[in-house]
Amino acid sequence: MARTSGLEHRIRWERRALAFGASTPLLYFGTQAIAARGTPGYSVIRQPASDLGIAGSAMAALFNIGALCTGTACLGAAIGMYTALRRRATGTGRTTLACLAVASCGVGAIAAGWFPLPDARHGGGAFGAGIFAVPLLLALCAGSESDTLRRRYFCVNLALFVVSGLCLSGATGLDANRYAGLFQRLLAVTVFVPVGVLCARLWRQSSVRPQR
Image 1 (cartoon, rainbow, N blue to C red):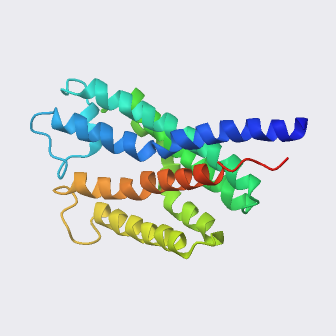
Image 2 (cartoon, rainbow, N blue to C red; image 1 turned 90 degrees about the vertical axis):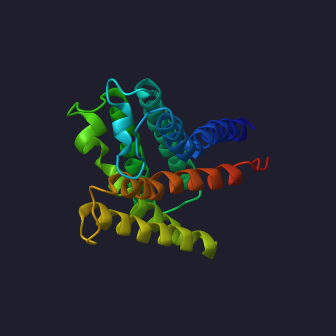
Image 3 (tube, rainbow, N blue to C red; image 1 turned 45 degrees about the vertical axis):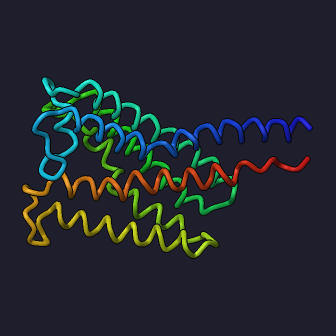
């Protein structure tokens, strides 16, 4: 009884972390949508998201607080994903690396909100570099999924990440400066949306009470 009660307690905390993690894409894109609408002259096509948080920007405070909340949600996602996936005996190595990458993404978002441009610490530097590994590692974790549709989603997401990265680098021949905001947001879709999707799925699965 005590062991089962302890498991239920952990699952409740796990579900809270996963629910918070599932809000990651809503916080990231929702904050930007509101801030961009309230910033005269701002272009979501040409300008990257971080321009909304520069000191003196009309909605800088809102954007930076949103970035802090997004980063905190990513940390919650990393914790909830780790406990949920480990409990389901998903590959330990893949799970650990994926959750570390999501946590790194959270650190980067917190640093982006805490140190607005042009601060050199914006984005967290090496500590936030895990953002570029999130799509790949989540796709690897999805390899053990029994649901073919979900596996395909994470694979397509990884392909979109590669394409958006190539667009940002200028390798496609498209003007990376002219469309910097668009390409950055496409890349962000491949990072924050799958985190929210995975957290939501794990949250639904963890709603089943363990048998006594």
